[in-house]
Image (cartoon, rainbow, N blue to C red; front, side, top):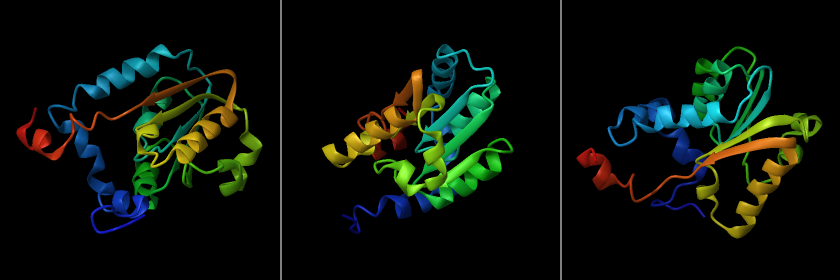
Length: 173
């Protein structure tokens, strides 16, 4: 439930979408981009694969996968403003959809219904840790399973809130 201290997720992310990628310049976060890239490299092969990025934000994962050779890129995020940034930073032809990844995407984004079981890789970077309930976590996993090809790969990351709390970010540690 949204409150002044805990805004609705879409509004929360909309509020800082244009500055979101600045996180990669924070000293404690900066090393994570090469680590993320090497992790995504390790799930190869990449040539001509289809990638679905759940909670794609500004499209960081989609950009990396495109650079590695992915041919089809689809991103889903709850924030329209994050997707606006992603539109301007991801490769031409990237499909972007507004939806809550905890709910059945084949129903909430009808154009994705034809894509069930068709993605070689599903990304869920900083997705699963945002599930506010077991039911929503199960919904996220259901979407991951529904869209992966047999033998497909899921790559997810989870934020360590202890490492990214405001005092630590202010201190640069």
